Length: 202
Image (cartoon, rainbow, N blue to C red; front, side):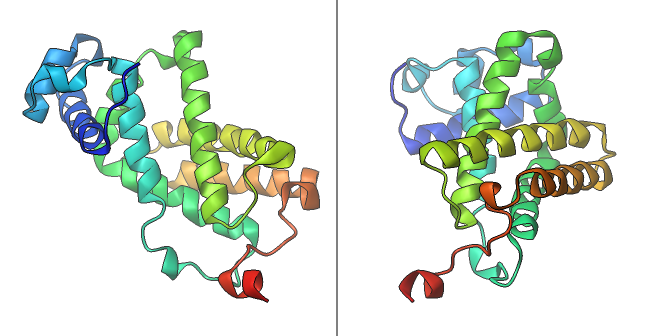
């Protein structure tokens, strides 16, 4: 697949959200996306509808990093992960209908389900990095895979929430983070405080 620069990816994400909110996703084409983005279709050379979804998910991932200076360094790792992941759902919420439209038929297509899991793992790596936890190596990969599953379960709960109400989402996320803490403890990094600049320089 051809590389798309960051500005094209942002425009592709905005166009995808715009169309998915008003058009069945299966009827969306690259030509329609280019038109919605006010770009020549050649700018999207090499892209696919799956790539458009990736661009949307990347935009939501980036929202997690907003206002990181507001994070409490005294939080437990579990609480910090909870707060960061909930930021993503808060970013998704204004686009609920579009996101649900893009996910139509997801649970009946193993290929789409596998792609969604990989996006959740990518999100998990980003969350872990922002939380100050290792996201590389065997331990980091295991953490990312496990947290990716937790994010996927919370997302399934989010689909069942009423608009603007995160009750099911938060319950799922809290339950599964606590379960991970109980099952894996120190190995998963839950018993440590997140790394801070002060700790790193000490």
